[in-house]
Image (cartoon, rainbow, N blue to C red; front, side):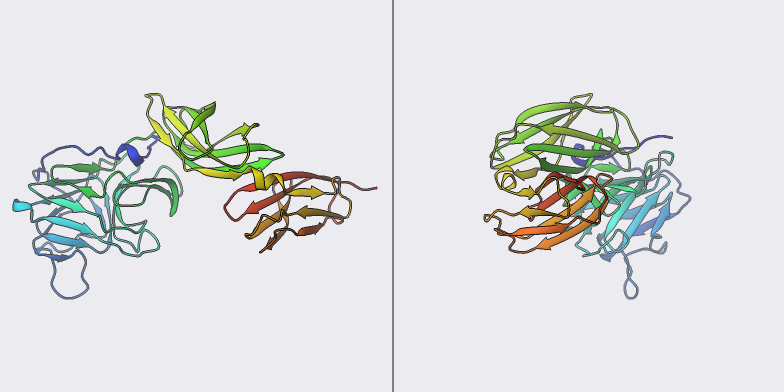
Length: 376
């Protein structure tokens, strides 16, 4: 099976100068917008000529915009479909506005499908035509390539605002899309390559050691990860390197431990490089080592109960969990204004053995302490 990968900041479907040709015959039909207005209307004037509005799922279609059209629906292009925004004197424009939609189907978008076998689907601008998505502030608005090689599908925003990669409706890569306007003479396609999608990056402290864990959803020609640390968010130091798997169409988990994080608020990020030296940066995780060091768990070993002492400096809500080594949540407690208090978990009904106490702070940082439950 062919593997297909993202675009993100490397420009999905590279934007290139090209001219638009209508010589090809399209089995799905040709649809031409000749009047200004909304793409989809339920009543009133229609922007389309006698060919009518293109179907929401258009296979091997030619769609031509020769007017000023506002996209107000979701359109899927498959099987070598072509959307051309073209016209003299710069009067042909496709605007993608803010839908406020909560998913792909209810938002204003053009989805260029790619399953590894279909011919390329494209959007082209020429003769002064443009695609303008500067107002498309909703996550699911814009132009996307949709890779069908994984479930849920992976969406890569080629034109629009906000994050550039999504796994289903969840953000998989938080860096912004490369552009919000497709200018005259440019093309965006359903193909493109990015070496990796990073997701699920987490940081936690266990007895003074910061553990970093992250996952890749897809890899192509990935080389290695640099682990970077900063005390001020400006200067970043490489504190370690982890070799990447290289090529994978399934999720791969990675980890790294920082045994000397220092004190205060420490920030971490993952810098990935492919075999060509191109980088991709993760989001940033912050750890408050000073506050975490003041959280204590006792008695340890515990027989009937275990206490969690929260420092007086903690003035925000705290989430506390007792977890077994298989990752099962046994007890959970949320406390507002927990600073200076001692919270107690009853453990007399659990079998002897090792367990984890997890303390999650409001800013997302967390501490993990091991506790042994023993019987006299």
